[in-house]
Image 1: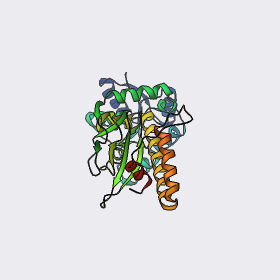
Image 2 (image 1 turned 90 degrees about the horizontal axis):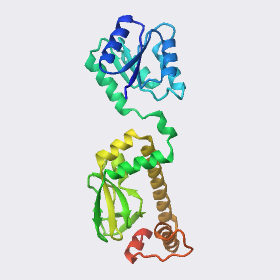
Image 3 (image 1 turned 30 degrees about the vertical axis):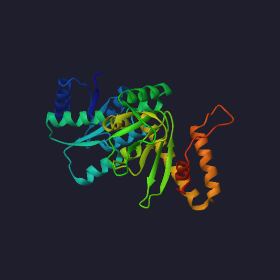
Image 4 (image 1 turned 180 degrees about the horizontal axis):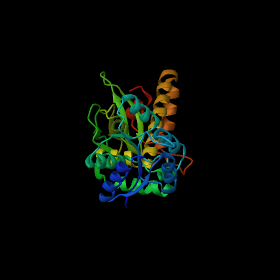
Length: 306
């Protein structure tokens, strides 16, 4: 699909020369010789990216950026200032207002192409905010299709605290726990995972090594999705980002609740809460009763008495 570029520049030579370079590169260009016309063209044509001078008649570049960011239709369009002014104060003002990049005139065609391409690749389209559930399901299906399936036996270690994260894990079937192991040999289980759960994403999102361990509680089938594929989808798809932000928020709340229980609940109360947690996670949600299958050691680690 041909990308549309809006050029807002009062200097005829620069405006026409920039448009010619982009036309030759296969872009569709629109031009405006002042800020007021530029805003009108942006709203009318919804370009994929905007190049804008700062010092212009009618409305300067800062005014253009301000008005476009107020309009929901144009707020997410990448915006690059192109100006002879390279003062740090001017650059800081533009960035604080939401500009994506600066091109200092005169610039050559390579600088121009690189600036545009890099911003287009990073762009998250506004339509992502109005995505339907079907869009999200399709994206998650694509992401999972990039993974490779591995079988894990019961009690098998998946990753160890301190390891560098290379995969996002998706549990196709089985049960998994994450836990901390202390120097005196004690364990504290932090989270339980069941069919359809992702895990291991906290360290991928933070760019740090694993802060806990993961092991199976039963025979499992797990998809291993590469770090690069996960980060690519996270950065380029609003639906994926939103889903994992929710997962991270839920994880933080659950760990806070667990710490409060360890600090203030009696052992009897913590055992009861742990059994409810296991029943909620691994029990049959369509039945009024359930049979819990969990070892004494795993229950003790969940309660905090291991």
